[in-house]
Length: 396
Image 1 (tube, one colour):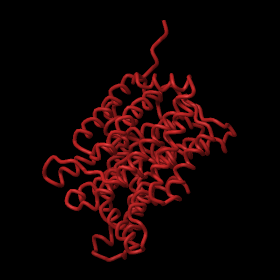
Image 2 (cartoon, rainbow, N blue to C red):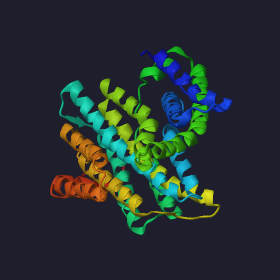
Image 3 (cartoon, helix red, strand yellow):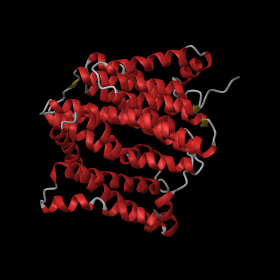
Image 4 (cartoon, one colour):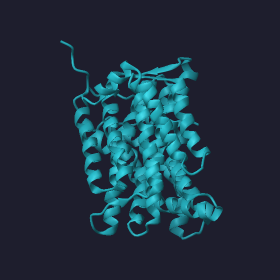
C-alpha cells in the first residue's frame, strides 16, 4: 500500500472501536478485544509516524525521555491497566507481570531476530554488524538485567525497585546526551508527510496524530485488556498466555515493522540500535512503572507480591536478556544467533508443562556460560559494558 493509504487506514481503523463504544453498541466477546486491539495497533502506527516527525524539531534531551515514553505508550497503557486493577483484584497481579515479561521477551525473541534474518535475505550477509555506540545501551541493559535477577528471589516488585529502574534509565539518558546524535532519515508515511508539508504543517500533523492516537489508546486499553481476559475464560484459553503474547504483539507491531523497513532500506544497524534502546526503555521504565500504578490503586505505598508463576516468568525474562547481551557484546549479530534466540522464544510457548520456564531459563544460563565466560574476548567485552560510558577509554 502507498503512504497515503497507510495513513488513511491508521486514521479510520480506530473508529471501528470508538464509534460503537460511544454509541453503546455491544460488539461481542470476540469483537471487543479484536476491535479495541486494532484501534491500539493503528494508533501505535500514528504515534510512530508522529515521533519520527517530531525528532526533526525536538531537542535531544527531550527526545530521549519524552519520545521514548510516547513511542511505547500502547504497551504502557495496557500494563498500567492490569497493575491498577491488581491493586484491588489480586488475580490481575499475574496479568501485569505477564504483559510486561511478554513484551520484553517478544522484543528480543521476535524483534531482534527478525532484523538479522531479514538482513540476511536482503544482503546474503550472515551477520549484522553495528557500531560501538550501542555499547552504552547494552551496558545499561546489562545493569538493569543484573538487578532484575533480585526480583524473583525477593518475590516482590516495590517502589524501591521503581527508584532503581528509573535511576538506571536516567543514567542511560544522561550518558546518551554525551554522544553525537545521529540523524535518522524519515521513511514511509512519515517521509511522505515530511516531503509534502511545511514546518507548520508537520508540527500540526504531529500534534493531531498524537492527540488522536493517545485518545484512541486511552479508550481502547481497558476494553482490550479486559477483552483478552474474558475471551480466554469464554474460549477455555489460558488468559495468562493471551495477555503475554497477543497484547505485546498488538502494541509493538508498528515499532517492529518500522525497524524491518529500515533493514530493507539498507539501515540494519540503525534498526537494531533502535530496538536495543526500546529494550532499555521497557526493561527500566515499564517494569518500574508497575509498582506506581499498583500503589496508586491501593491508595498507599505498597509492593506487588510475586507468586510462583510471575517469579518464573521474571527469571526467564532476565535470563533471556542476559543471553541477548552476551550475543551482541561483540557488536555482531549472526543469523544462527538470531535463529537461536527465536527458537528459544518460540519453544517457551510450545512446551506448556509446569516447570518449563525454569528449564528454558537454565538453557539461557548454560548458553551464557558457553558463549560468554568460556570466551576470553567476549568476557572482556562484557566487563567493558559495565563502564557505562559512551565510548571506550582511549589507550595511552
